Length: 428
Image (tube, rainbow, N blue to C red; front, side):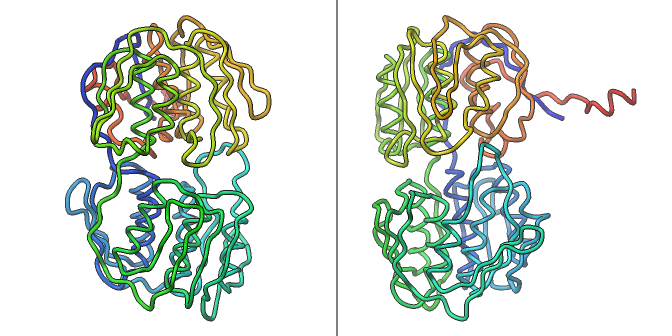
């Protein structure tokens, strides 16, 4: 078992380079299944979710070769099965994109219901309704296997009752080779939706309107291989921006698209943090205690739900009372219990957290409840006085590349340590 050990209270200085976007790459790798040829994908982050997704593609017959540490070659021409068993998908939420990709390629798919972070009910009913609109018969069978089958996928008008990133991506994957025109209304507009559309178009697809709430997809007969580079990760960038604001110091976050970070920058400025925007960088200068502000998570271009635990951690040490409203996921405040162990004064009422800022957090043993909660614990540990130990860091490794090394590069006192499993301790 591994954990992070942080000796907090040190300000952060220097530059940090952002990796490729987790939320984009976990959609783009399955999209390579649709190609009749070789896809070379660059700027992929070295994170567990990527490792697992590539393992899944190998498991169903794709040839996967790492050209270097951030470039992968995928040849899907020998994939002959549309079935992905639970053993391959159980640790990964984004494995549901395999349904859309396999359905798009074979007109049928059988994929086990996915795993991943647990912060409330995350149904995929919108995904399944979208597949049905394209002409597939969909059922959930034994062992929670999702089966989708169609004689021929046909384009259709699809309206989502609520904005869903996952459903938008899955329908895009299924529709690119369907006959006729598919129109997705009330589509998600996140940057990784646009990145997926650009990747599909690089393979010969006809996808228009990504980044707006209406996406139009005209089906094509075949898709070819391509070379493509993943966009920078807006959530990783936001995490380092908030960490610099919480710990104090002067940090330049490099290899970013500032347009993707506007909602995060706006809240940091509201908190009294100095934000200097460059062409492909954002500089964060934090010399004083942050000020209160209210935050409400919303679909893009609103404040990202994946940044909610991090910004709440900053507000926990801000002057005054802040209100954080979560409008995307249920039960995303589970991590608050960990912050209160460190002296935070936060009261949760359903989807709202009332944050009474304290002057400082105190080090304590905590754990990562999920990926972004884990990032929040790192931020808390950096800002706190004393030695903080974070367990369950496997969640953090799912989405942050070289997180220890990157924070060390900014002067943080953080290390990854291996500790004996409890069973081994008892045996000794």
